Figure 1: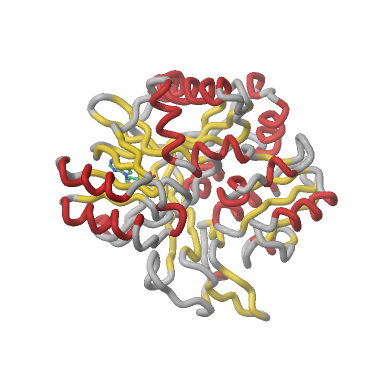
Figure 2: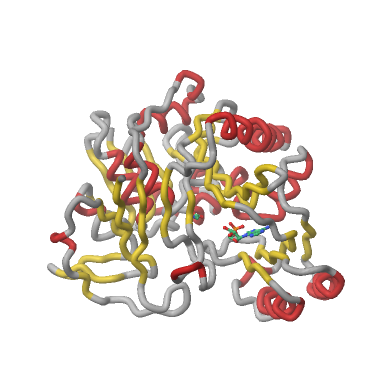
Length: 381
Ligand code: AMP
Ligand code: GLY
């Protein structure tokens, strides 16, 4: 098969790295890829969000695997010929791209999640913040590259965040609707599950670390590192999460006319009252994927094809023993402002770890930084 991976981050390098191991894959393309993906396939200079460009190029390949949320949210899968694209449709991606919608879906079928209120009116949201106890969490309802959720410890902080989102529009349209929700305590877990419209195949649970700086002292990022599997979630608990959280959500979507096919990722808080959903994502996690896929013993392409064809019921995933840890190397200043174009040296000297590239670019024979999260190193213990 000829396969196109859409995206250019660490997740897409890891997806390509795993796909390249399959005997079913002859040729790999990345759009746009990075300096790491060009070592295992061909980079095509098409932006991941250029739906028209991708659809045109897709005529040359058998399968298109879409990594990031933005192309899914603008309907790339809807535009591809049926069965050619891996990922949910625009309507199904709403579970990630519209947090308010996701909360309403969960509420209808009693999926455990933080208690919440939704606001599109600044004045009403402000009055609400005047009356409640803290801490709380304020979330931009739209897509914000993992930077749209704010844990607020005081009323003053909350009012400032709300003003930034709804009046200053710091996240643009993403913040025109906000979800204000109860603060939950516990361990966080990411559970990524292949969903073929009816059946489920869970990947091993992982844990992302979203705050920057040692000791979680900084703001939330897209994710600074991850490990898998987590030691505190056993098979029965995963089964329970599939029953209580994934199945009702997928069935409610179906009731609303939306078939979910692809990877559904739940960010969960393991609270004293049991697991509760923090958010859903409509895709593989980044950097969770970089820690999970190196432990996957099964052929990724077979899983993807089974998901597209509705045949997950016949699939059993195989895993290698051990634990994998992914550490993100970021540009100075990330998740705020940072410089690009800095040379990266020493990549050839790295031993016994896999280096997945994220924000990197080749400039002649040099590799330079081209984003906030730059490299993901993965070690297995
Ligand atoms: P989200 O964008 O919804 O995944 O939120 C980003 C991060 O904010 C999560 O990984 C949590 O660390 C934190 N967070 C989100 N919602 C809550 C909540 N209700 N209670 C506590 N922490 C939260
Ligand atoms: N690791 C967080 C995310 O992929 O959204």
